[in-house]
Length: 207
Length: 396
Image (cartoon, rainbow over all chains, first blue to last red; front, side, top):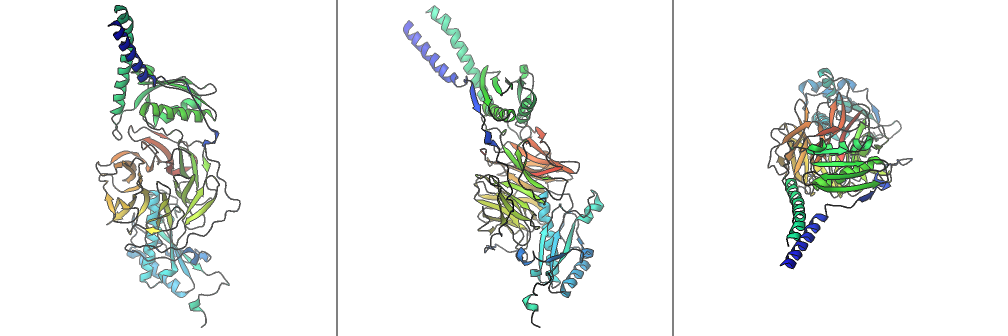
């Protein structure tokens, strides 16, 4: 009886110690490695940026909008920001709809493009500072595309028109009130001229 | 016999009491009520630390749901010293046990303190802490215009510039499995998508099509990248391989933005606009039908981020202010509005969010524990810091 009790007590003691042992941790040492932070990024001395991937065929579910040519088609052209500065198109809050009041500006732009077939057009969409950053980037792009589509209806070949969005990163007015916001919700139009000396497009040559 | 009982019984009682107390404590942890925005913090006391080590421990533990009380009122008593190296101990007052005794060597006291904070979090909650994690973000001298992409510790310390372009940048996104970032930069004038390898400093163009190229988001396995392109005449969601190859259009919405991934890589979640209303939606990453994610009660949702555990989608709701909201990813519960702010990004352990909020006309980064709503600002790097992205894989 005594022996049995001793054994059973000893057994229970052993089991209890085994169960509790894990929470009485010995003093552990964690050596910190020196290289936890990434090495400081270094810019290549002359950063060469390879061209983007080729225009792969794209599976387009239900295409909306008018496809755009690549940036190569205009990136070497000369930008004239003054020529069409008077025809900036403005938008209502959180809207990319071209208002009737803005149609005259688009007609003037269409006329300028018709007057010189060598030119192309860059439309820059912008937003006021309200709205989240990436949302505004998409809204600005939609505003630029809205002008491109409106110009297509005015018989401007959309292959001459390119877009980009600045979101809220390029305000025309740095103020923080209604007056500033109205000025900032806009499309700026940049006329693109061929570099002097570069050959005229094939369609214009010969005659 | 009586003698044995005299000796053994008190011993047994003590052991059982200790065990019982421990079990009770385990039950408490298991049944910890974790309601978004409405969970009580875990009361701890902090003794023996000073200066930067005390600051780091307080910051790390506060934004992971701990509150600081006197040793008498504490559930866990944290004590130790930082004389040369950090030495720490965590005692469970109720169970009368020591959960952790550990010392740290090497690197800086600051990093030792982060490591101790992580060990405390793991000892108490069983989850990996965030003390040694990294974020990326954009930093601008003013509230708009040119800026640079930065990486730093999650609390904003040790900032390092990734770009040196003085160009408009946006939306950095870590690539899981590689030490690198996607981001949008206007360096070549147009908004294009770049990838920077942080170990070599080299970078390459990922998307430079006609129109705008922005809002890159690496897939959870790092093999793909989602983005917004307008080359087909509408700002929509596209997915390509990690290097930009094999591009595929996923959506044809009028105006889509801010793609992110489900942690299993099966879905791309994004903000869209249908009949003039802003909504969150998801589309199969291989293409398919767009499904709306219901966020009723949190109007004008944008900037979704899906938690690594798959349970939640955090996003920004816009009324007259911006609010950080969280909705269950399976639609089983309505959204919870947490705090004022924009552009949330989940921590690797799906418990904390980093986001930005307005201070005047500039943005400051902040870290939020979604369960207790305890929030602290991160040290400011530039005039305006925004669009934070939390690195999801823990081991750099």
